[in-house]
Image (cartoon, rainbow, N blue to C red; front, top):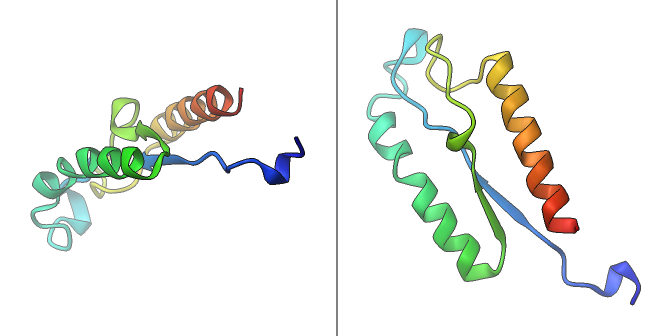
Length: 91
């Protein structure tokens, strides 16, 4: 079967947990509690629509510099983990 006739494979990735920190703390007030709720919502929607799911918070954390962006090591860990998930997904 040609690849363009197959159902696309989708990986839904929930973000690392953001928190109030550094120079963006006031912008992201309440982020920690809200961010903790994201993974279950992402997972439920992945299941609902037949997508694969990966929780980025299992391998990466946001930087204390601003509470939302990743440091280099966390970006690398996330990249490796997502690459492994995609490889598994496409077989």
